[in-house]
Amino acid sequence: MSTEEKTKNIMIERATEMLDRAYVPYSKFPVGASILTKEGEIYAGCNIENASYPLTNCAERTAIFKAVSEGKKEFSYLVVTGDTEGPISPCGACRQVMAEFCDPDMPVLLTNKKGVQMETTVSKLLPGAFQSGDMV
Ligand code: THU
Image 1 (cartoon, protein in one colour):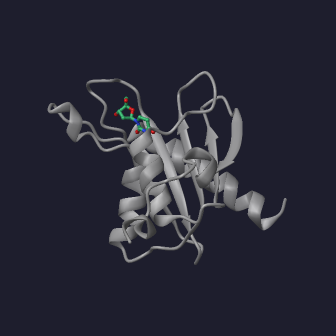
Image 2: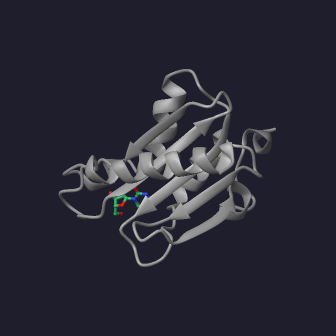
Image 3: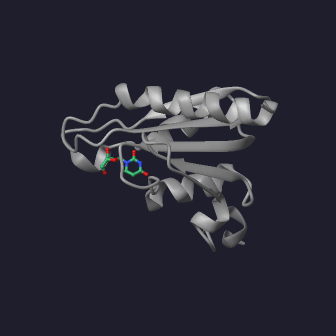
């Protein structure tokens, strides 16, 4: 197995572990994510809900914000998983946050507990994302 495949498997494991950490008393829909920095570190996150529903933080944003808050802003791979039928689909807010911190062609693996996998990219998930360059 190549180093890349090993890293991908570790990332899937880390994202899957996060399903047990998800705080989802309202939706009962756990989501896990893991992001790889260009230096090779992995940050993982889960969704964290709130009685005030809109305050919920999705798993992808938890993982990305954990990394950014540790000073990491360059990423090379993202994994998202859930207990879904098909590969989980990230919400619009998370797609926008991915577009802020990740290269447009960065691969994103959408998977689920059953092991169904779909690899896509940040720009395929959100074509035409609003970015800093759009404010000039
Ligand atoms: N959720 C995520 O964590 N990521 C997504 O991309 C889709 C939605 C969470 C938010 C909420 O806790 C639950 O799934 C149901 O919407």
